[in-house]
Length: 60
Image 1: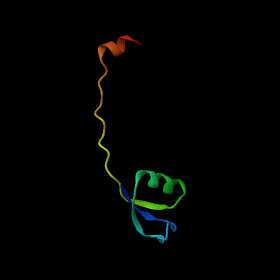
Image 2: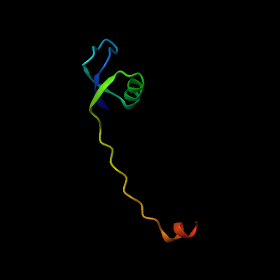
Image 3: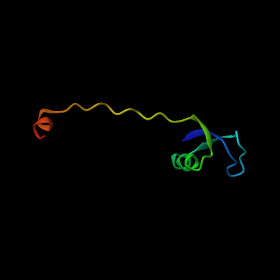
Image 4: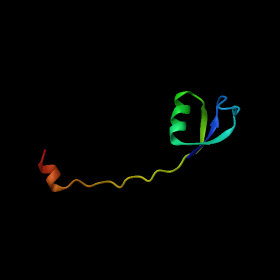
C-alpha cells in the first residue's frame, strides 16, 4: 500500500487529502491525473546482479 496526496476530488475526499491506496488504485489514480504526490511508497528490494557464466557466453 502507498500513501498519496490527492490533486483532485476522489470518492468524497478533497484535494490535498492523504489516502492509503493499493498498487492498482495508485496506477489508476496516476493515469487519471488525480495524484499530487506519493507521500510514502513501499520500498521494493533490489534484485541482486547475476553474473554471466561461461556457458552463457559461449552460446552467443
